[in-house]
Length: 432
Image: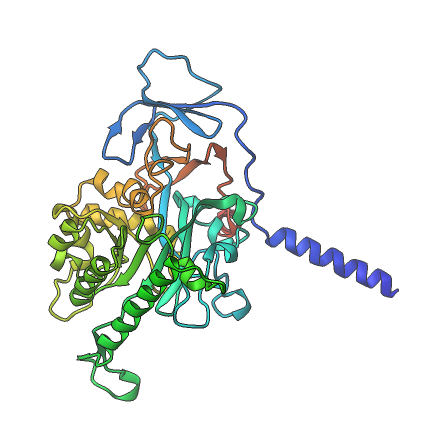
């Protein structure tokens, strides 16, 4: 009797795991595919009406007009009246690191300690995440998985969102180190009855000095012959050669200016500002030092009382017009589930002054350049990965973003999630 009970329990666990698991990742592409008739938005500012897109073995083999006299390869998909886009990229994301906020055992986004450059987010990335699979439905097919917490959070990696495990998912391993810059100012703690006005952080200079000292010590370690390994210092190897990018999370004008001095002081080759709420105030310095910005969530309220009401909506346009390379990120409240709204952030930028195709590049080619993966993804160009999707309408407009097909490295991925299953279930129920 006990044996039967255990067998039934095991079967129940197995069935529940099957029902709760992510869909099986798509198999490797085995036959060429030709998509013709759609409007192709290449991600680099160019548009091809009545386009022909062909790919084989996971790579784009032809991108051009459907009027071109060239033999179609493999399966032909008629996409007349639809739109083709490169897969959207979500930088500075904790997707796959937390599944349920209220369940501590599912949280892997931060580590104990202050200086953690050796913490690798990639090995904690959960490809079975239900949240991750819901991204594909809006065209978000890739992301930079980024740790949180501490002064130096750790090392991020770039993945694609249809994989068995993190080894299969990785596009670029250990792409950069993330630093949370000290805040020169702080607001009063309202829950303690303090006024909400800004006040000076008296420990700011000390905190910056501690960070400078740590980077200097790591540089000295790299030059020495050490019998005892220091993993945090070793993780910082490559920031002066450009093998690793330094991502500094900072919003204020003073913090950004000091971060740029930090770049020069330590001969950091590649530095990216993440957040950058007041980046427009120092855009000349950013252009001068060739520092791009992963701009904070566009769908936000102004931070300061004297800011324009629409400043978060127009920031991208201001920076682009000043010559800054800009991508969009979505960190903040409920960031993981809100990442699916990434295309609509770009749509808001277009609504507030940015050219539509330029706005598209904020979540495609520009982000790929910032992450150092533009030789593989970010635009529809021959030789790059066939990571793309077909939408019935404008993918930057939530009213018409309805995806028919999505491909990651040429693989035809499943466009279903727990949410789509519930939608179909209750749509059928209430149609009766």
